[in-house]
Length: 224
Image (cartoon, rainbow, N blue to C red; front, side, top):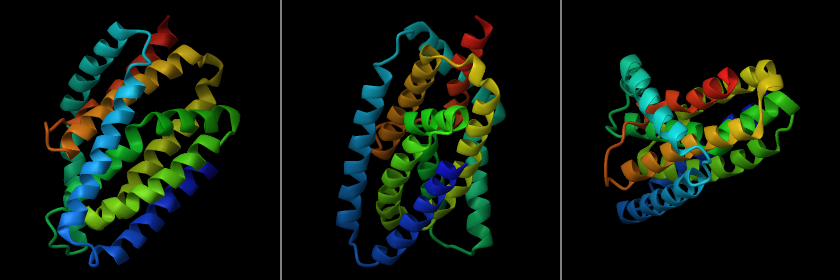
């Protein structure tokens, strides 16, 4: 769990730094930074998604995952959690929930979050998560400067999500193979692509409801 904890603290540190810089950055610069990050997220998602070797599995995973996530109302519950945190801290900023949900999804659904956590659980190798921590810490500065301190609280779902995958990896390490990890990463990359579309306001994608999709390839490979 060392890599997970380092990742969490990097997000917290980056968010605190972003809060310090927030008032000194005009909306004009905040908007261009968000657009730059959105475009980068799109590119990352595209390059990760095209690595799939099981396109039918990718489609089925997204469809089934979306149905499960919609039934569980994951996106809605994430927003409710953001609203709850907002009310507890008496924050009047309407972007609190947006920052919380957006950052949580960006930090959780990427290939590095999934593969890094599995690597940590299976081999005790935290290198991927350490690298992710640096990237997340830097991104948190700009996210927080643009969207406020809702980003700071995204460290909570990151800890729960990556920590759970790390522990899960310990128990299924005998069943893991490269094909499984590749397809899980590809599905996660499609979700990253969805986040990019939402960030650029091209199309609102309910990425939270699609989160269960990353589990479908694991179930598929375990069954076969």
